[in-house]
Image (cartoon, rainbow, N blue to C red; front, side, top):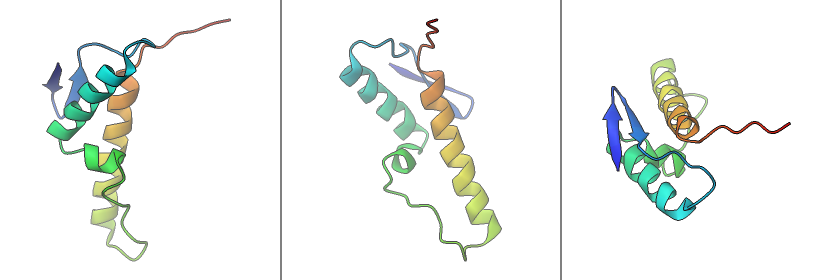
Length: 80
């Protein structure tokens, strides 16, 4: 189940290499709950180069938030 933490969504179960479809669905719902799924799904395209700086900055912030939520919901493994 997804929960909100500040402005971000956190998935209670991090992806560990198993049950990808369930994890993906939970991640999608978590991102949708904070209006970030459309950026990940590329439904919202980056603004054109002639767009004002404020709109570009807003899009970039949302994209970074989405990426960080995804990354923080993966289990990091280190193999040497």
